[in-house]
Image 1 (cartoon, rainbow, N blue to C red):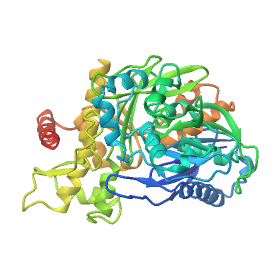
Image 2 (image 1 turned 90 degrees about the vertical axis):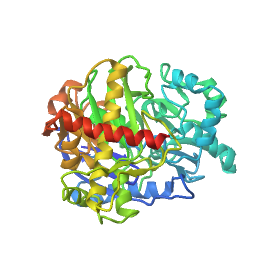
Image 3 (image 1 turned 120 degrees about the vertical axis):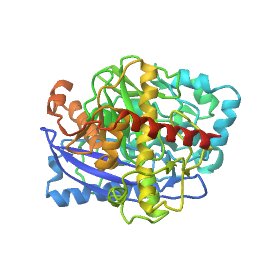
Image 4 (image 1 turned 120 degrees about the horizontal axis):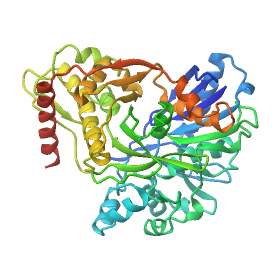
Length: 487
């Protein structure tokens, strides 16, 4: 069987999958979020490593499976989150700076004022934003003296975990994670000298860029695993979900409803550069062939539900929001713009902040809950329509996954708003499944993508039921709220 490690923003999942692409079991271990000041988000790398070990240990105990039966390990991870550690000792030199963190926003604004945004977009497919890894590395170099140490190295979470699993012997990243740094040329798939110079980042401290499907190294001195298990895939979480959903053909798309919401569209062999503030990214690279994708990223999706739970405390668990929202037939005039950490695609406004509109004396917790779910769907509507504008093609079906896609109320509203069916798989663990599939391909578990596609099944199909008049009314309210927020 294959062990997949899905290292996410709020927890780490260990998952076992067999040759029939059947998920044997999974275990998730959460870890703390760190907020040093407003707009800053960090993770303790030791917490991440310990959550990884504990998730694997609990999974092996739960399934009573001998770890010697693990044939390979695949890794998928929260992208853009940036780490620095001592490559010789494996010791972290600072907390990881999380993808949600806005501390480098002023530096990004400075680069934009210098007219560099088109230059970065042409080379990387990305926009200058604090979201991406490169400006986070720049901040670490400026503010953390330990980064100047001889053995200090940088990487994303995939790099850190692979280093730890191989007893600090391997310092690599995969092409999908590298494509999210503002440092990799999206056509050559190499670190770009000009970009590294602008961001003042020494290339010798960056990991070697590898494909998504090859053996990088083998486990060594990991307490809960035997030595010699090949680590044969690494892939950014959203690209992993695209692969896990078997979106292997051009114009096939998926949306992952997680902490954020991430929409990816397979664009085939050539990168499509957006004219509407979407991102061009590497989907995967295998057997010397590169597949590209267009991406729209929403910063706050499931995180808005977490905020209702932890901040406003109107629900005790995330699952409660669906029942609370169902108590009212509509959100009335209430519209929520969840710009709690700025707005992502297609607006890319770092300074926007969250707002509720249309509140009255009659507004209840149920209206707030329903407006929060609708806000997730509204943001994804904007992504889909922007993507169709860029590609000049319509999307006929959307594959969905991620924790919030279990919410039937949200899925039905989303299908109605987009006026296309949504396909939800039996298991929502598309991210871990994608990493496992790539790892299995690297060691010959499956012959090709056709074999995998045949074994990928849809469990639930949500068909659009919303009337055109109702759809227009919803969208009118949403776009008015967005314009108010941006002005």
